Length: 161
Image (cartoon, rainbow, N blue to C red; front, side, top):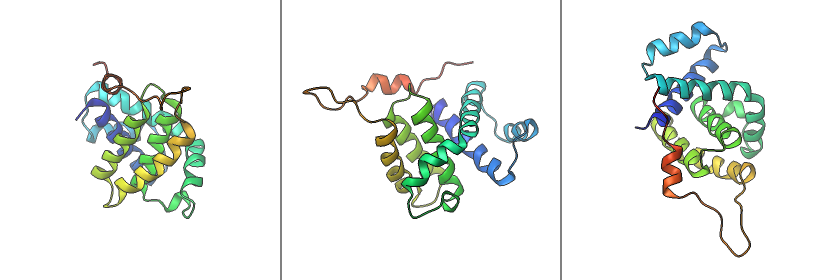
């Protein structure tokens, strides 16, 4: 598993626990990292994502809410809700990670950490959100601009700490 995937999974696990405890303190964060042994680069990446999601939480929920029309965001399973928040944060605030990478990573994390239908649910919601947040650029006479295989691989590399 790549460092960014590990960082994303750790971030989702932290956000899950944070939501249950409804507090964010240095002690809470240190307790989490005491249990979740991670390399320095993984932890740094996860902490950056956690900080971003918590900073933009109201904005992220406002993006997700209208897409899940028949649900209040609070009714979405905690794991799925936090996977969506993390992915929407990346779509809106981390432009160097290509859209397909954001969506695929979220789906894989949902399959790993969520329920039986989590992957499909996250996939459907994120595809709708991605079309709103990152509409594809269509050049005159050309199809949509998609990332190359090298761009996808480069987006997943994290410099070691």
